[in-house]
Image 1 (cartoon, rainbow, N blue to C red):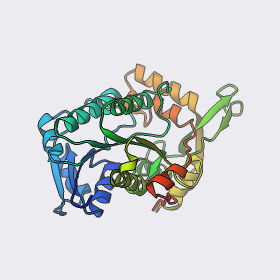
Image 2: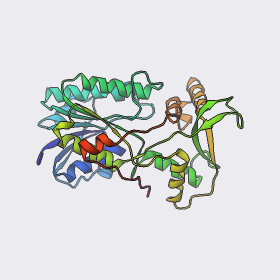
Image 3: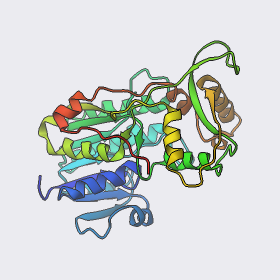
Amino acid sequence: MAGKTIAVAGSTGFVGRHVVRELLSRGWHVRALTRDIEKAGDTLPTADDALTIVAGDAFDRGALADLCDGADAMVNCIGIIREAPGGQIFERMHPRTTGRLIEACKANGVGRFVQISALGVRENAPTPYYRSKFEAEMLLRASGLRWTILRPSMILGEGSEFVRLARGWVTGKEMPHLFVPYFQRHVGGPPMPGLAKLEDAKIQPIAVEDVAKAVGESIAREQAAGELYHLAGPETLTMPEILNRIKESTPLAKDLPMVAMPHTVAAGIARAAKALGLRDALPFDYGMAVMASEDSLAKREKVEAQLAIEPREVAIA
């Protein structure tokens, strides 16, 4: 694979910027698609001669042609966790975007495609995030390309939006200022303090560097074509444990209490806010509340055996 060219869509996002660095470290040429040239200058090693920035998005045919021309593989890191104004909706950002990238690959002779999906994705999932990610996977499976799908658990590391938000909570700089919020799984009883039966979801967070390494190994190993890999770290943690680690590594963190909200209550609040036109007033939506109630666990044997990756413990610095 020495000297090969890899196209990366979603290159300036949290995962994408780490993928770009991983691919460059392997001696490959990288073409990075971005809508924001200034952001690319801030987040990508633009001084590296092996990196070419392509301005545009997945709905710009000219940009996609430039991205794919002569490339050996495509990596799709584009994704959103919640919908937002400006066309940031699940259907557009997941299946439609993936479909456009597939079309561009076929038109330009790019036969290899690596898709960043998510652990928990399934056909009849309870959230539109999971369902739209599943639809994107199905498009890729039916494409005729040599695909690999990566489904990571919660991804943590440098540049994580969740870590940034949590640092705001533990320092009191972000709403709700007086406590650190999180969701618990509501498993029984009325959703009232002292009466609801709640439990913490179990999470195996994965280091963003290991996700990027899985992308590189998926491209380098032909046997990874046609495979789906679940990516999970070696530790099983709860959200309070993750938040405590963030607190311990955050300067000026305050001794604020952690307050859990039943996921059913949070989901109801999010639905009501959306109906009232106040969707963006909350730092979460219905789907995020529901997904926070699910365990995010996976066996690692297949990844270790086929991609030679032994996931590291997540370091929150």
